[in-house]
Length: 388
View 1 (cartoon, rainbow, N blue to C red):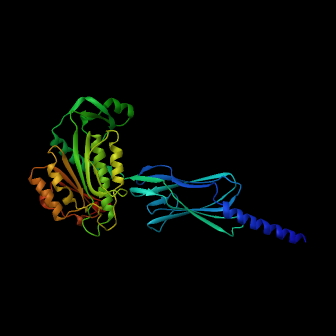
View 2: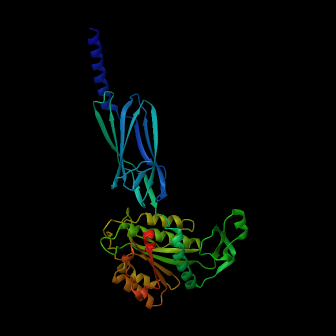
View 3: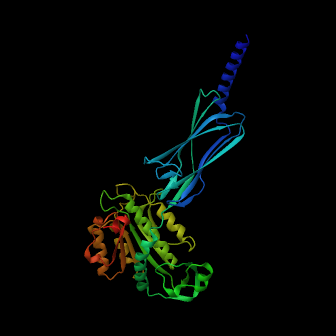
């Protein structure tokens, strides 16, 4: 009789809890997974915080959070041998009534771009785990990953040559009495720029940043057309990093760069350009955000809904109208005849410019000898390049 009473009691509890969980399992249950930063640079780390809050009398003996990240995310301390386009994460929790649980996971992101937490799904069970409840949630958490600088030691040589050409081209003098601030010494700086007093205090070389008697500008023209169908997207990514490196290092020298690309914005699908500046302070963020939004597709040319990304068709006429005071910096792996003919015509017209060609190996470099003076090769595999 006692056993029968126990069995009846268990059956009552079973059906009652089954009914309660069917109706109220997700009542006052808040689940979030979000990036703790909104902006980082590629190669840097970001924390994703998972949070579950159960504000009701029903405990949740088992609840699973599932979501998907891009394959460029790697959890710190976890060796992931298999490379895929996506990273799927499952986290299992057990949470009591009126309890909040938080977990923080440290990830590194290896590629520039705009990322979201996709397909945030929660799976839950009742006390007897005989029922499974599923719900898919929207996540508005977004992470902007800026391109990183290229190797600074290698870049210093190219930058020194380009900056020298810009200085010669501009015929503009800095005002030696108006200081904008201090920065660290770079290999292309002259001895007269060193601030010896600040150097003594800091224990490292510091140089003066001077105001200009007139605003100097250069134009960076980034062509993300691929030279051939097998061109690796990492070559295009390196071109984007070079664009950032030139723009920010020239900015440190008091030169702001207009930037024109044939890349499209991954969100708006518009062609990305930087033709004006709201303020000096926002310039660096403007450059970083614009370059982070460029969409690059593996083994495909990128097309806009408005026009193809043929660089020559888009910009050849516009380039001819730039004033002679604007120095042009072309960054392009694309080396086909139409592009090189455009540059040769510019040279014949007396225009000063530089062309930086990022390539994965020496055999991918096929520039006309008439453009050799204006051209610099940039090898991705530098260790391999040194042994050639």
